[in-house]
Image: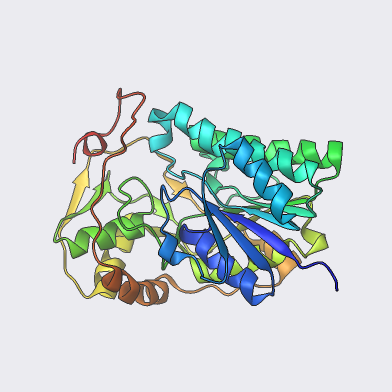
Length: 334
């Protein structure tokens, strides 16, 4: 019998990871999920997958899993993806998002993994003029983007030194089912839905004219899953996500419409963030074919029944702020 295809999905109990797990299972992979449940939930993991609770920062655990399961592919989605907060949790950010990734790359080289799929971020581009293209030189403006770009560069080095094939995706502003509704620092769609269900104002930093292209998770998970078996993608970086940008003010109105709930909008003091961020996706279309793009209104309508069934979640403050200077007051206190 041929050896089975065994894939490791880090962050597989989290938002995008849980969707990628389902796609891989549908493709016939055996799937092992490694997740520390800091932002994910075990009940989101498909029961057909093997679930291991643990951290990618635990090098001994990572090595043991690679030796035991003999992974064919690695899908690395585990991250603490809070761009704005990363300024204030620099050590935590680099430990989890950079050093943890290096543990996985080392193990992938040692155990001759066939392909390493990495979800980076549009944050690597910083304030470059949109639409961002893969041939632009990244200039990240926050430690989260710095960490993601560093992993991209390390994968390039590992490919040329050890022959480790890889694919990098730079998704942006992804929303949908399994999003952590209780995370107050990231994923504005989930934040808005959570605030609405609690009868709280929808909080917007600044005047709300900042623009983002919001991406429905069901449009990108199948592409990520297929990428490790797409040789034309090896050694390449792809922007992936929606094309049409919306202002945050427009998003607030569409979320209220999808949820069938009317809420107050409260504008807070502007924070240091990129004003306009959306990408060009012509490269991913050339390699993987033209992708489905679910309209924002339709995607929100698909997500809203799940959000209502899940219910509001308490939004806890991050417990280990390293620098409080310039921290938005709403992040320091509930």
